[in-house]
Length: 259
Ligand code: YXS
Image (cartoon, rainbow, N blue to C red):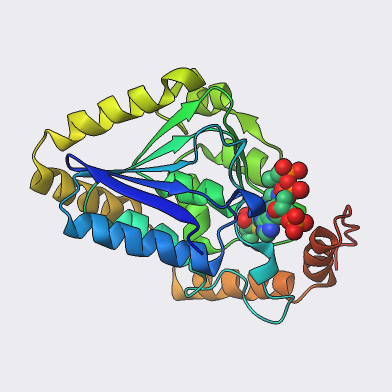
């Protein structure tokens, strides 16, 4: 079953998340389809790609498919997790990927959107970083995605509260490029994509890769990395992590005990 729609018109590709039954949760299957679509659009010579949900979506994406998260004893966001593959595929895609956002963006879907090169949001868009709500130890490169997008105090507010922020605040912080009325979202995004597609694709592709390398150039000692990984293991081996996943599946509020 296809969970996305893909098209390419005059050098501009569009990938539409289209699995409303599961609120576009980023399952391994959906991520695989998106990555394959990015590859196909590159082969077709698309000079910009728009990543969107189906028109009128109340939820852009509900984030990582919780049903696919391990229930402890294994890093839930390791290198080979589908969400990590998707973030890297967007960051390494040769052409700019523009997130065209309407509705709610949750959890790992926020990182996917923030990993895009530009973000155009409808005025009904919201963004919620949810690791603390589920008890998940977000991973190092994911936290760097957030830190490269928002000031430290804002990243702490978003990750510690797990509460959504609206598009106007996201624009004021600088998380999104533009906020427009929903009715203007497609036209605004298309105009931006056409402007980019009319410029030199090689120069843009190289500048995108330069910026990726520079944005990721953060020294972290081997000891520092090992400490972080050890701390993260304490979390994903904790009763709280198992409780967060179980509470989500049982559709109830989690009771965290700090162990
Ligand atoms: O019960 P059925 O089978 O109809 O399925 C329901 C939900 O279980 C399912 N669904 C999901 N399935 C897997 N993973 C998800 N993330 C997920 N979200 C939803 O979709 C069906 C409809 O959901 P329902 O009834 O709640 O829809 P709604 O319209 O009332 O509410 C929409 C949402 C998005 C507000 C609500 O579904 C929701 O709060 N979803 C979870 C958002 C969230 O916390 N996402 C974070 C996932 S974990 C993650 O991304 C990272 C690991 S982390 O947390 O670290 O950032």
